[in-house]
Length: 337
Image 1 (cartoon, rainbow, N blue to C red):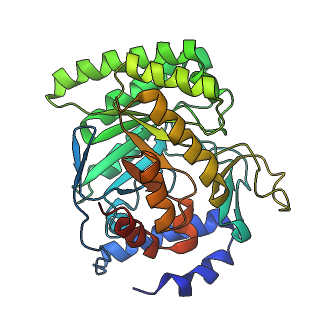
Image 2: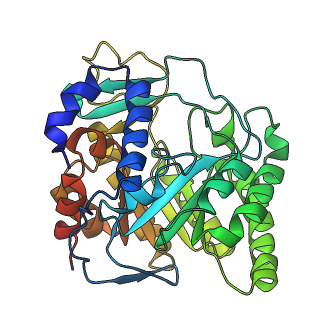
């Protein structure tokens, strides 16, 4: 395998979205050609959401929306993978350009808008993969579904994805779908979680297995909102919370010429804000459900900091763009206890 530091300048010479697509094709191609696994030894396994994870480090949703490179990505040593966000119907997402690198900050701004081939296409891809590890499927609503009908989209995706998922993530926190974050309001959230939990229990009976539900929340929440969400998670017996999605804030990149671009900011500058949300959730949840950390993990030390803040698992994405596969093994080693 060619070392990532040699490949990165070539990828960074391309438009960010084109480089993203090329990388997925190369990862998939490498797997089809039987490239040697770069996976390090598993860390001590950890039990979260009733599932046994071989290590604490996972791939966040967004990198492989359509499940095109799952087998190749599994060779990088992740303890789990999350694909999506996927919606009931295919949609193209927002107009291009919609993905921007900020190398000086190890950051990314995106306004992709849930571009994906639809839940049926994803499940068709997943039916042919060899990977048998823990696989999360991240679900969302179509951009043109009215917010008052959002639950219908999530329930449809839950119904379809249930059989093939190890766990399912409910994404209500992307800043790039109009009004989506309204679902974090307590009334809307109560309605959505009640519907999802009722359907989850019915599907568990139907399929003879229990597939956990995780809720992915935004970093742009005040203390009261975090407490309200934590109460709703406990009330509806949701299995985990993922903290966090991207931020609309621009703290730490004010001097960048790209700071004015619309979209969610991820990568290094998100670390402190997302970690603060974890600490607040730890206090509010009092250990009643696990936290999966995402946001700003660009080093093993930062992965360790998320665990020390109270997370059970971590997920990486933007850091992988800048550091490559070495970041996975570094994070596994750092969280290896």
